Image 1 (cartoon, helix red, strand yellow):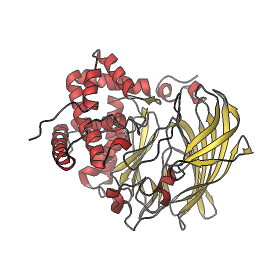
Image 2 (image 1 turned 60 degrees about the vertical axis):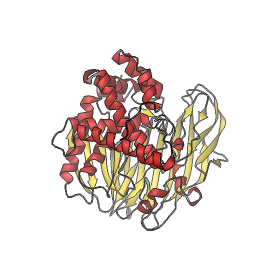
Image 3 (image 1 turned 30 degrees about the vertical axis):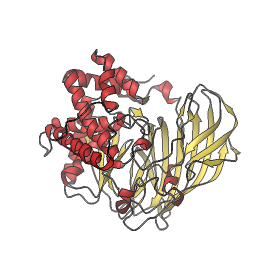
Image 4 (image 1 turned 30 degrees about the horizontal axis):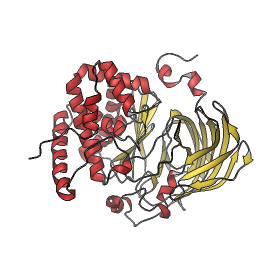
Length: 480
């Protein structure tokens, strides 16, 4: 039986047997910026329904020419494509189910969904072995999936099973440039990557072995009970590490004059969030400097930090992305339909870090006061331009008309909402609620209703009207 400590949160022996398993094999050609790959998906039907098919997301095709605009918004194009627009994607060549070749179908805008018919109905608690062969063309773009001047990002690069929910079936939400359009149940991963020997790999998992294979280096890493898996390749990586608690923080970088300071910020963040939210359940975390259009991006056990960010902002991004390891990574949510659940809480968690670390240039008060002034300015200017401003927070990514509307309502207003919530509850109850929320929903997908119910029960205060007011945009701000 499992040990009750970290393993009690992380393992759950019976739960491990009820997860989908992925074995991924990738061979990368740095000259052509292409890769050949396959995935063996040991799919577990965790639903209460018999399934006649399994649908997979092909996120990489959001970077294809047919999907122009899906992955990169107009305002970010110049930064994302410094060498001009460039496209990539994933092509499926063969699919087998339980060793039988099947005819698959591509659906969605720009073929972003793969529909795999099953040989026979898959009943609840049964498994199907789905083998998918594919090839990848990586675009020259500073983004999750693509290559830039210093690194190659492999995130959202493989076919991943769409989340299945009772009533709605497999999720058919389309990729969108705004925010992070993802929602995945946890699964177990084994990834084997072959790449040029002059490159180094930063991976979101436990490196099991590396061996030389002709002119290539082959590395295998595993990651259990995670929502996704990713890695970054670079011939310029330098590597330092430090340990905090049971977690080793690995920092991969190529242009950081204060690398030790960046590593210190990362380890302090893990230590602080361990104490305030609950223990991080993985043995290592990779913090990776790379080509990225925005400040950073979170993946389980790996965070990307843009090489275009500098100074105090660079450390802020590190801390924010690490907070996502708790809010999105361990406690999951539907980032497409309820983005506030992870982003608002993560942004406020970053403010909490600064409140408890006075050696930094930023302070809690400066972050909250800055958020207040920024939000008022947004309301004033946006109102003048559009005539009216939708200040609601609890809406899907495609319901935000512009990126400023999304950022200001989810990030900026989110800080103000959680600051108000802590004032209502008091610090002791507020942190107790966060710990309870983390423990209760670890490795699950939570919802707005779950969040409100959890905080109401733990605090002993009915918070429904409080959240309704904030999330529906009813809390008003005085604009001078």
